[in-house]
Image 1 (spheres, helix red, strand yellow):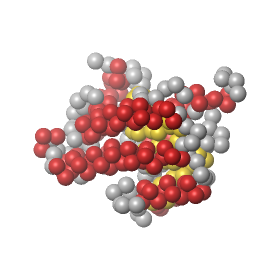
Image 2: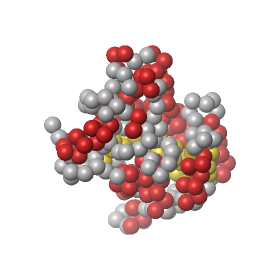
Image 3: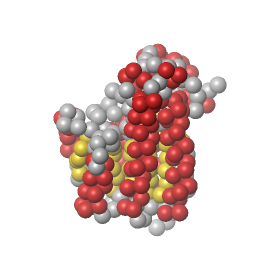
Image 4: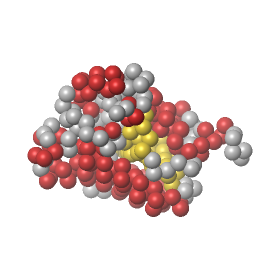
Length: 261
């Protein structure tokens, strides 16, 4: 194939797993739509019985081959998803991990006041589950592939009221770099996607989120926030062969906000 062929910019015949769609406002939904638009076949997970009423119509819209529950805190659920993918597809080309969690009392308090249990739960769901996911995905990526985690600018700079999630996301970004080093010889690339603030169900739980939104718009060179479609398009491009020589990076999709002093 010509290295400049349009085939390097699509995902036809590729198989991808999306973890983290909650509704049509989710970043994971924007990414899933973009992956699908580039020709990929999708497997989609939902958190629990309550969430399936929101996620099932999305899975139908996107023609997902697989729809399964996946709460990474429930023993065996993540493994069951990958077992099904192995049985049904026999391969995997990309995975998007777009989940994070911290108990409200820890999320809304200062880092210095965070509980050990709350910190460990946030680290397990938001970071270590990505590592576990990568371990399960790698054997199915026989022809290489790409792994995506979702981060935020607060991982490297202090963002007011981000508190506990700052060091957790920092650990996630470091994990991406180490995984990229460990898996690169298998042709597996690993990325952190770092959007600016986006109005999702998860982000609405942060203190003073509306102020964060307005302040970010003022300080962003493009003078507007990235949408889930913007994030999805850029993420999907990173899954194509066009991005073969990029790995271990935090990809900012924030209109340039992160460059500002």
